Length: 228
Image (cartoon, rainbow, N blue to C red; front, side, top):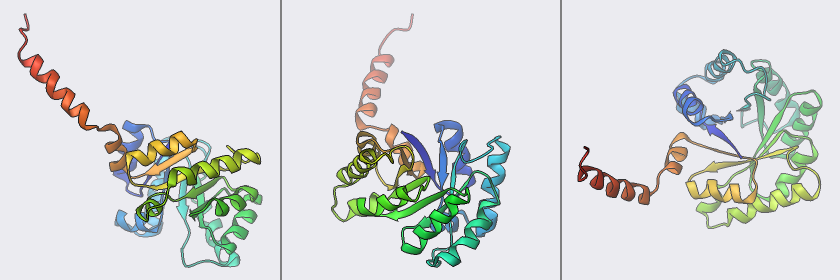
C-alpha cells in the first residue's frame, strides 16, 4: 500500500518525502488555502520541487491538484484541467464525483491527462470512474466514520467490485480524509492501493502507549545497570 501526503505545504511535503518515503501528494482547495499561498503559486512550487527531485511524470510521483470546485459542467472543467496539467507532468487532475466531472474525466483520460475522481462516498460512485479509465478514485473515510458508518466494509466493497470486474490496480483506490492510524490499518487490511492523510496522522501511526511504557521500563533498567 502506498502512502500519499494530503497537504500543499512545502515543508510538510519535503519532510514526509525525506523521512517517510511518501509516494505522492494530494491537494485540495482547503490545503491550498492553508499553505498561505495563492493557488497558482502553491501548485507551481510543488511542480518545481518535483522537477528538482528528478521526477519525470505522474508515474514517478503523482500530485493530485483539484480544479475550482465551483465548476460542475464538463465544458467548464476541461479548460482549467488542461491548463493545470501543462504546469507539471506529475500533475493528476482532481475532479469531484459529479456527472459533469465524470464526463470531463473520460475526455481528459482519452487525451492522456490523468485524473482523480474525488469526493466519493459510496461503492456505487466508485464504479463509473473505473469504467472511465481514471487513474485514481478517492473514497473519503473520515467524514463517514464521524457519522457512524463502517468504512472498513465500504473500502472492502470497492476493492471487491474492482477485483470482480478487472478494475483493480488499473484505477487505484486512494482512501482519503484519513483521520486516525486505525483507519490506515483498516484500509490496508481491505486491500486499498493508497492512503492519503496529513503528516500528523502518519506520525501518530508510529506511536503506541505500550511503546512509551516499554521505553520507560527499559530506561529504568538501563539506568540501574552497571555499565562496566
